[in-house]
Length: 323
Image (cartoon, rainbow, N blue to C red; front, side):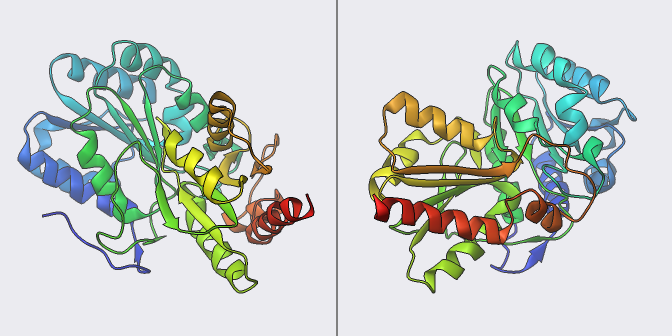
């Protein structure tokens, strides 16, 4: 049985990856796990199923290519590594070797956004824009470490590839209680309901969004927080219903370039469906190389930290009231 975790506790998403893959590996002998020399979290799978574990060394392109070959042979390969390199260095292989033939390769990794203090070469900040642009690719970004196992298990039944984005994955806050939400790839989660404004977010910024909503509740502002953990396919019906139910006021918060990620995906839904909005504001990384620092410091520096989030939500409500 999958493990359950307690709301509010700190948990390692990397540990969940390792234990889940080991459990799935015991259930099906077509699961292979590959890594470009980032295998510390995969020890349990490697020790139990050494014949189905491949470490190619620091060669992301080769790792994706080998995974594609295994998928052609009828297997389900999981590639686990650091996303700055799996999304950029191996982009051609992901596109041509995996997405073009629509193979069931699962790409999961850490360091999505400005986490890890590794500098701009080690931040995945363009990755969601790149992956969303690829035909056949499903794209997810997970903030609650307890969700990782469920998303991995669901992905086993998918015919095509999936990209699963995490933060550093060593110490993350469990956001939801066991069974609190129906986690389904392709469906957003209303993490907190509200009526004045919708705050869309994903991944590393979900916890910040919930804290901002709590702070504004004390001012009488009711914020709906939507954890849009699947960016592609996006839950367009939830976008539309949120517009109708929160006065057409949207704020999008994400640890990604402010253009190309979730805000762009939501703006496309708004345009395609002709949804009338009273306000729309995107909070994310501007067109800069972010530099060094802790992730919370960098969010504040680049205008999408906690205080900036609260201010944007106030503006959204105020703009509509003034109108």
